[in-house]
Image (cartoon, one colour):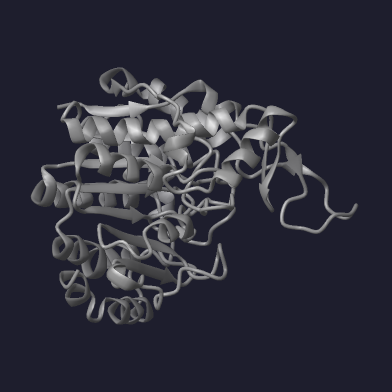
Length: 369
């Protein structure tokens, strides 16, 4: 079967404006474009079209989430606040998370796009799929937008998919360079969702994502945080997959694997300090596809999160889409021969020791769920 693809032009119309990000008000920092702007997603979409790959995918329609859909996780007060501000001139969901008129409707459409991919995969209409949505979602909490996110696209879609398809177990692999705090909150005490978040230690949010955060109640052990020190490259991430991600998935045996796909772990990203390249994202996708084939009939759905290098996000995204679809395009990553040879790409001894410590006792904890 073919690979599904969800994109809508309105995703690019979500307006985050201009400003002096990360700094207090004043006239000491020249305002600039918000980091979460439409450029990286537009260029990803454009490279997909230039490569010819878009024409060989199954286009999946977005149906916007209703208030009922949103209220599976978010509070009614929060939903009402975002809708009211959006109907006027826009506002802020939280610090650093501005939005303009109409963004409520666009965010509902983005959540619906993520669900459209999950639904098509679960119904067998596509083998796997990718939702190139905006705004992103993995930082959005129950009553708070955060980290450029308005609504929790992945968490909301899982909740809806579980109702429709009677899923017993879903695994989320979040490889965005920032911690997936919103997804963690949504399933903190829920053994039906395994969350594996691989992120730069204390990058964002600085107060979450610690290895000691493992869930609670019946969900104790179902949250797996993998905080990594800055400077980790291809070798370190492959070790994380070998020692943590793949053993955890095999111990859990999910019915569906979902990826929160951020490309801000790339070597060129302005908001992260990792060294990943398009080959890393291709290989992580290959490994997850193999795990999905073995564990859950190949069911794998991806939803776009962060990634802020306009030059490099498109090549990382294209590598993932080529791997998902099994189609190699005529477009090569022009940066790969350089960045794949950077110092730090190999697994370092201290990285291996840190990852081994994180993996200790992991399989037993998950098998007990």
